[in-house]
Length: 294
Image (cartoon, rainbow, N blue to C red; front, side, top):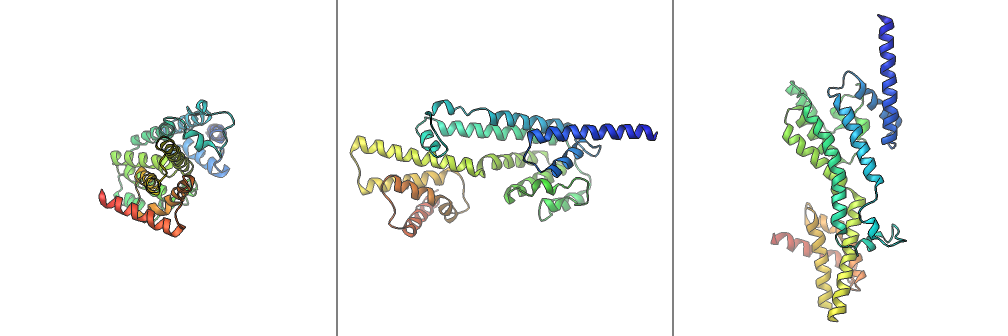
């Protein structure tokens, strides 16, 4: 019997080693110790959803394929386009922002499918355990540290707001509340890949800025209009356009986040604010009025 058990243990270790190697190829940025723990957990008998292992691998492989494929806008850009000139060149391409948004959404959808498999997870019968997990101060504290797999290893680098959404999603799933869990997982991937993706959001904002400058130049060339009033209107329209792109807690938060881009745009159309303070207050008043008009 002990010989058979030894063989089984050896096979399990071999499988885990193979899986760990596979994970290293598709998630090279994950720390070695964390990756090994994750591989061990997914390969163990304690894993309540064995099929999630394959879904996890499939999702990351699809994502890797997606990231290695050139964007649809790449053939439309001139040779010599660099990271510094990318936004300016994309502003000249019709529909570039919609294409980028669709591609980013495709990446989010890949991971939505992975989380879909969690809907098959059996709910927990112990309501007190669910309450304890749901009300834990943080996602890392929701899981006992003494367990073989330390879940906190996977969430240390996760932004706080994203971790809170993920925390709520897991709590709903364990409580058998599948529908709200799906919505929260979807919100989580949407935030990670789109709303809180600084690189993506910065690129979209820069494209909008350059588009505004292009439209202003076209308008001036056709109409010969370069009055203070017209430039101020363009500046305000650009600011309100950014404000409407995504929700903000209040006009002040929106001003703090968007003013640098608005200030750059104002300078690009040769209609700068008198000072940074004056510009900030002006943009804040625009956003305040826009919020009241809704």
